Image 1 (cartoon, one colour):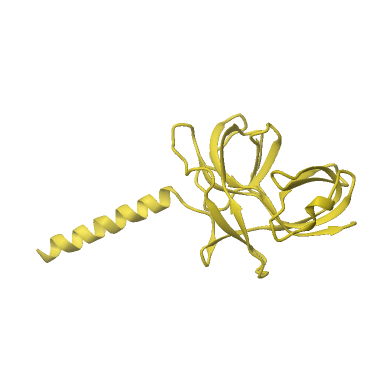
Image 2 (tube, rainbow, N blue to C red):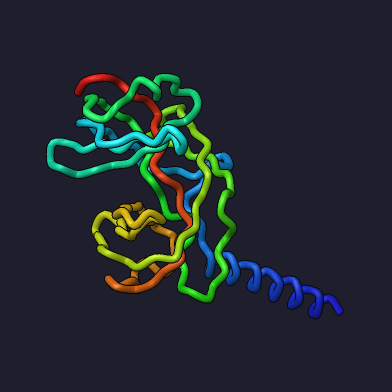
Length: 189
């Protein structure tokens, strides 16, 4: 009888491990998802006061769209043409799958913390989109897809996210992700 119980416990543990291994999550620290911190300086291209986002173009022409959390109060003063320096947490893929696989629902709230260890943390709302892979940067573990508005969106893909190594440009994927979120906004460069 004891052997049957031990075998049963081992089978349940192995099943639990295989389920967890087949659907890995981004790195978590204290219940929050650990993401890269970045800095961008440039000219504001557009603002969306409804969505509370700012799109910035840096000196190289690269655009970055960053969500502005409620703690940053001066979003009404930011207008196209303004020069800003943003410190932000990069957008990150939470799940990556093929069509037919049901991802988590839109609107899931997640806490993000910088990988650098700084004490900042922000709350982000996830989005889910079915889209086509436009570009893959395997060295930096980034994919570029089109966001719901058909704009290019580059996202970090955490090391333990399954399916990244098999991706090809042109693949249709379902991704759950967070947008980049500002930690600080400063005028000038």
